[in-house]
Image 1 (cartoon, rainbow, N blue to C red):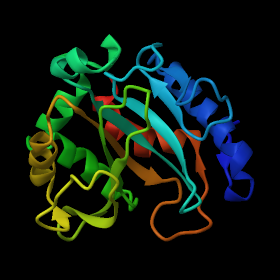
Image 2: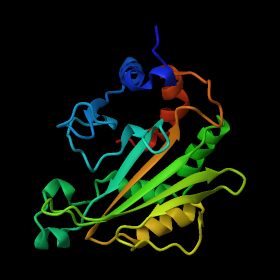
Image 3: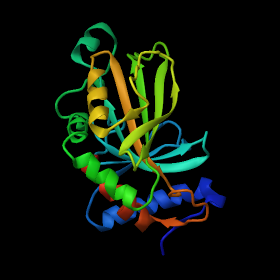
Image 4: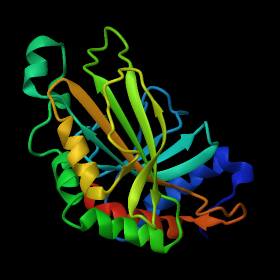
Length: 238
């Protein structure tokens, strides 16, 4: 029996549904590890399915389940991060696990913005009539001694123009600059590459709400989530 996600009981259902998603993957012989975003707080709102048991595993793409408190929606998708460069480690107290090398999935994701692979994944989601959202965070070196401000940008996918349109921007650093409120996938790749310096961290969360479109009564079970949402994004979970 599959666990159905009902928004009337979302606080408990999301955890059970998440476990069933993990079970679905295990049944197809794909091993993912169930991780908490905040491993010191078991009740935190972000959950990961990671290809490795490392926590945190910054270098890997991960399936993510996330509670957007502002919209009061549970979302799922993938999270991908860009680490710091070696120059940052020479100045700040940064763990080696945060220094990016060629093994990070970030590099492949940036390439796939312009070679058609990300486009195909987004088309697969769009064909299912899902809303598609992109959250981007940009932060100067955080050496844990002070909490650095963050630039946050929220986009949504517009199928007619085949571009991400900016929905909201919160400027803490005030460093992210956009020439337009619309980004094609190729422009997205070029944009994030242009901020590829050693001293800033980037975080991308590509997701869909677990209620597709404008529907309010749709029920998704774990099988639907795996087949319709996560499988098209699985190329970057490694």
